[in-house]
Image (cartoon, rainbow, N blue to C red; front, top):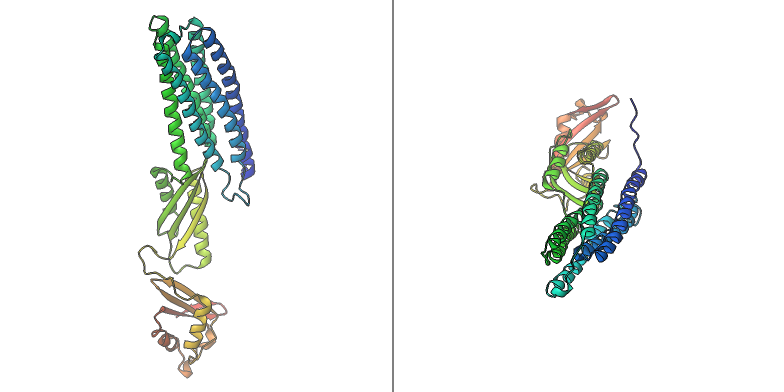
Length: 398
């Protein structure tokens, strides 16, 4: 059995970049060769749609370089200036890809439409245009599937966008095949119409990519079914009673989550901290893209419970207790005091030394608690008081 090697965030980022660089460079070589070849053959074989398809392939080459740049910088780990990492670079690059596709589509459609209104400018493509278009379909479809597999593996929306860019080139080449074939059969307008069809498909993909990226830049949440998966994982953590305000947002290929979890209000700080750690691990384990989780521990549902804002903190509370208990026999003798802010009041756990008990002097546990609770009854900030007596062997509760 082989031990699983866990890579550091930096090593994971470097490995991710290497995979993205490899697939993008392969795609770049194919785009360059196809783009130049389609434009040359389109010009020689008189096919406007093939020339348009060649321009589309060269636009793929330009976006490949954008992907390489964004992949390198977007995979860097967080630093002081970018504490949440550099994932937004991928989002911006994806939006840029979308805009580039739309601009290419407008140019193709404009030229093809103008030729439709000037019949003398219409091209009459030859057989080589058909052959090159078919070759383009095969190569670009292969690049699409190869790139998409890597994109899914490294969880890169930008690389998925580039894969779809390749798929649009394959689809547009199919339209070119139809247009060229129809024109060769005597339908003179079909090549130009095919060019317009290519432009519309390219524009649609560009719009979808850009719109999705804009949503992500506006801190769009994860899909509801994925959020529900995180919710179930958190609720399964021992010690979590309820949760609310579960929020998520996408940052490139990663997702950030923050949540309020309700626990037993009488827990210690350290136990609450351990529950928070378990919640963080559960959320990260539920979805691979979750890389950062902020957990807020609540002793109650702060959306419905009376607010505790404005209640004094420990320093002020101890001063108030000293004043209220100055007449009590054990004033200042407590070993520890725990404050519980619940239901709009401060509930107290006070731990006294066992030596405070003196039955002969009438200082039994009940009388001491009554003596300490009496002055607190007149103070609206305080609620329940629990008294514990500590012995060398441990705590002996009242």
